[in-house]
Image (cartoon, rainbow, N blue to C red; front, side):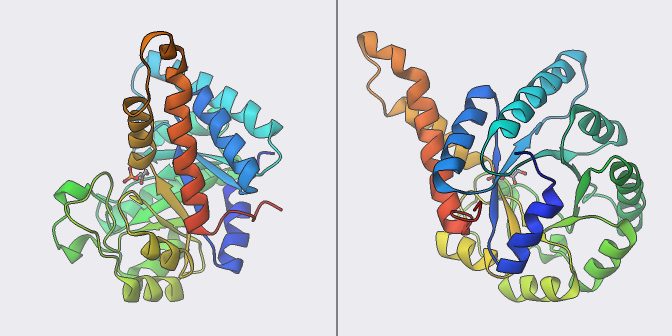
Length: 282
Ligand code: 13P
């Protein structure tokens, strides 16, 4: 069944577990993700549309994919929410609402505090009128390979409460040492900071850039206020490695898609276990 993100995260927050949100690229990914979520009895969050949608072909593609994702989501026995990840413009958010997403992520994290609030509050107003939730970001989650020990990009707890109150956002992505893509070395999450942010706000917190974060830290973060945890790079690497490691010689080449989605499914199973979402769809 399709469900709103806020509703899904409410229980995760109360019971202190995380729900992984996965990059889903096509219909086969979606069907594989639902298959694993059903096996693991886990709720499922689908991240669709990483790219900026600026031309007609890509818009058609988004529309097509969303329709098929919603269709499979409706048929599934576990709760499924679709998130339009990282929108940077008002128009992108509206396109996401029209396409049928349950949540729009409005990323204005590179803007100054006041402008971030102004733009996100505008998106929240229109999205809530359409019964769509909004995830916003305070502090900035950059790229792992660029991540310097710069705590300037970290979320400030004293700003978080004001930000949530003034924007009305339903979930808040935080910057606590996490970053997108591959990391240089091992990332180190600031758990004291997470505790302070969690105490300062009521909304469920989101951790982007899960790939590469040590398993024990993921579990600890999910028990400390992180309710949604975004996984991208790990799923793409799993597809790549599934194919590279398979014996696809001769007629075995017919198994190429099984190899790709098989790798994808194993990664999903792993994340549903370490976040604690397995078993929570009952
Ligand atoms: P990774 O690709 O680092 O796992 O991050 C994905 C993400 O946060 C998408 O919003």
